[in-house]
Amino acid sequence: MPDSDALTIWPLSGIGEVQAGDDLVGTIVAAARGRLADGDILVVTSKIVSKAEGRYRPAADRDAAIAEETVRVVAENEAGTVRIVESRLGIVAAAAGVDASNTPDGLILLLPVDPDASARALASGIRSRTGAHVGVIVSDTLGRAWREGQTDCAIGAAGVVVMEDLRGGTDASGRPLAVTLPCVADELAAAGDLVKRKTSGMPVAVVRGRADLVGGLDLPGARSIVRPAERDLFSEGTREAYARGRADGSGG
Amino acid sequence: MPDSDALTIWPLSGIGEVQAGDDLVGTIVAAARGRLADGDILVVTSKIVSKAEGRYRPAADRDAAIAEETVRVVAENEAGTVRIVESRLGIVAAAAGVDASNTPDGLILLLPVDPDASARALASGIRSRTGAHVGVIVSDTLGRAWREGQTDCAIGAAGVVVMEDLRGGTDASGRPLAVTLPCVADELAAAGDLVKRKTSGMPVAVVRGRADLVGGLDLPGARSIVRPAERDLFSEGTREAYARGRADGSGG
Image (tube, rainbow over all chains, first blue to last red; front, side, top):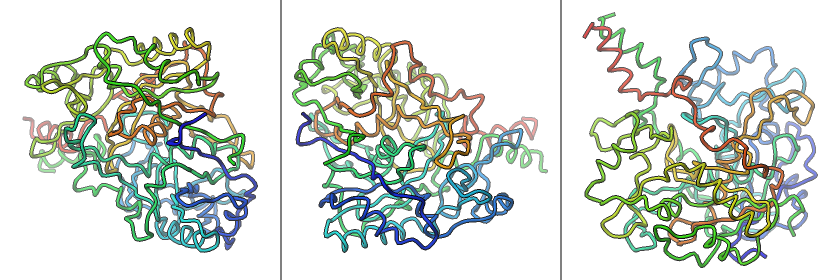
C-alpha cells in the first residue's frame, strides 16, 4: 500500500536486560535477525548504552550523581522541586539525564560517557558484522521550553546526517528556503519512540526509508545539535536572569 | 519484513497547489486514493490549511502581519534580527509562524485561525467521506531553546491523543514511571516531516501503526500542549529578564 517513498519503523524484540560489559553490537545484530539493510537507521535508547557501559550509581547518591553530571544550573522552580541543568554533554535537561526508571533496584543510571562515540562504535560494529551500511542514533527523552511533555531526541549519532541543511535550497515554487534547518536526527529519535514505547522493553527501533541521510562515520555527531549557551536566547531561566539583573541593578 | 507492531509512514502525492476556499477534505481524500484505514493518523502541514483558509497578507505588510499574530515578545537577539514571540495560539516561535516560503509571489501566510478546529473539521470530514476512523494532526516547523535547527510539531490535533500519559504506569521492572508524558502528537508531526520533505510539495503524510492513539473528536487538541507562561521557567528571554531585573533593582 505505501509508496516507494514510505518510511517503515519497527522495534527490535528479544533484547533482554542489558548488563554492564555486554556486547551491545552483538545483542542488536542478533535481535535484528538478519534484517538490516543498507540505509537503515537504528535508534538506540541511551539507557541500554549506559547499562552496557556500567554507568550505575547507588540510588542513595542521586544528588551527587546529578552534581557529577552538571556543568551549571540553568533554571529552578520556586519550590526547588524542578532543576534544569546543562550537563557535561551540553544538553539542557532536568536532573542531567540521571535516570531511576528501568534500572535495577537501588541503582540509578547516568548518560553514556560520550554518546557520539558510543554511536560510532555501534555503527562501526554493526556495519562490519552485518555488511549493512547503517546509521545509529542514541536517543534520550527530553523536556522542552514552552511545551508540555517530552519527546525523544538524539544525544548521540554516527553515520547519519543530524541536520538536513536546506539553506540554499529552494521551495516548491523555486524561492530560497531561508532559515530551514530540520534536525532530522531529533525527528528520527522521535519517530523511533513511537514504536519503542517506554513500557515495552523494546529499546531499539529500525527506521527504513531515509537512506539518503546515511553516510560516513565522520559526519558531525549529535553534539553539533547543542546550541552554545552564548548563542542561546534562553541560556538562563527567567527567574535566575531577573534575580541576577536585580542584584546588579542594586549594586548588590 | 517489519513486525506487526511496525509503523508505516507515507506521503500523499498529487496534492497540487492549494487555493483559498479549496475543499481540503476532498483534496486529501482524493490523494489518499482509497487507502485510508481505521487508526491511520494524517499529518497535515499547516501551510495548506492556511492557504485553504485564505490566510494571505501582502509580503509588504509582513511586520504588521507578525504584530497581528503576536501576543507578546518573548526574546530578541541583541542585533534585533531574531524575535521570538508568543502568538495568539500560545505558541512560542520566531515571527509568530508568519511564513514567506512556498507562498505565491508577493504574499505571505499566517497560521490557521484555529488549528485545532481545522484539524477537527478535517478529521470529521475525512471520517464521514471515507468511513475510516482517522486522526488528524496539523503541523508546523518550530525552533527550540538549547538546540539548533527545527523540528515539526503539532499545532492542531483532532481525534488523536496528543500526550501519552504514562504517569501511573510502570516501567519494564514494574517501578512507576514518575514524570514521563511523551508528547506523541509532536513525535507524530516529526515523523511525518521525515517523509513530507520541505521541498517536495507533499504536504500530507499518513502514519499507520498507532491506532491506539486514535479516538473521539472530543480529545484535547494541540492547544493543550502549550505550557502556560506562568508555569514556564523560560517564559522570557535571558536578556529581557535580566534587563527587567536590573531596572527594578536600580528603582528605574
